[in-house]
Length: 239
Image: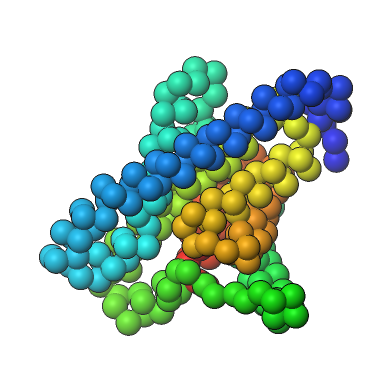
């Protein structure tokens, strides 16, 4: 359903659209740079943690880019006086809970449906994350609590606050809802060129990005993509 704001956006000029999309692209690029800086800074710290608690170090090793995303989100929040994406971390509605279940399952179904087709066009798919975390927790219950805190309360929020709360927000002034969902999803997928590489990785993570952006657009609640993103890490394979 179109809102009054979306109707008004149909009359928005090329300059406003270009500025909105350009801002989203620029923030995405800055996020990528910050993520690489995070790898340089965080990786040695994770190594130190790993010498004391090997399992926790291995867990953290999969999330060394998120602090960079979180830094950019924090800078944006400080810069903006009239908008704080943290205000959209809210209690869940029934629809929000449904989206949390649908996003990881829908993504996994899409991946399984498309994967057999890839060899027909000369492509292949290989994951870049490792083992689903529930298997790790099952084997090592002593890291369940810190692991869940790291995924659900720290790393997934850092990533989603940047891509849904911040980058999605920059598209709102001039782009209608379907465009925001598509552009935001593609930008999220595009960053994986630098972290996992390959067209297939971009394709699949763009699907996830579109699902997360669609859920956020519907609910205006950042808790939904945060929980869905961390839930995928937990149930299926890390993204």
